[in-house]
Image (tube, rainbow, N blue to C red):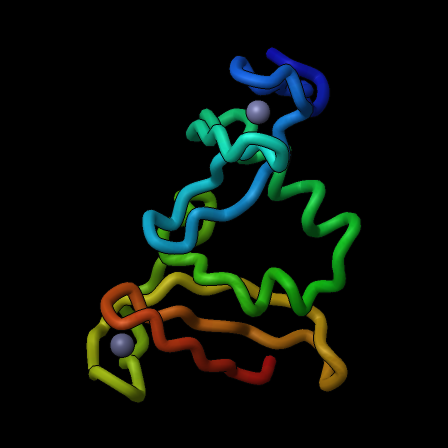
Length: 117
Ligand SMILES: [Zn+2]
Ligand SMILES: [Zn+2]
């Protein structure tokens, strides 16, 4: 068990590797800003990274992320996507200007919508 974010270093140039999201593959990767080296993050680091996001950035960042590939979030089959009519969505709650809001993220097309609670 690790107790904090591990620093990773580039095997090519020895620079610090920074976490970033690979939007195409929907995975977290570490990349070197100096030489462009890149490697996949392992799942335990991914959790650490997620915690950091919610601490340091506004909730809005989480709201804007595509959360379909996040295995820690619950799924429901009780909703219908207003865009493609698929009946499975990932959902999570977040506080917004309007108060606590439930967000749904369609598992099929990625469409996101909200429900006020
Ligand atoms: Zn490098
Ligand atoms: Zn959909």
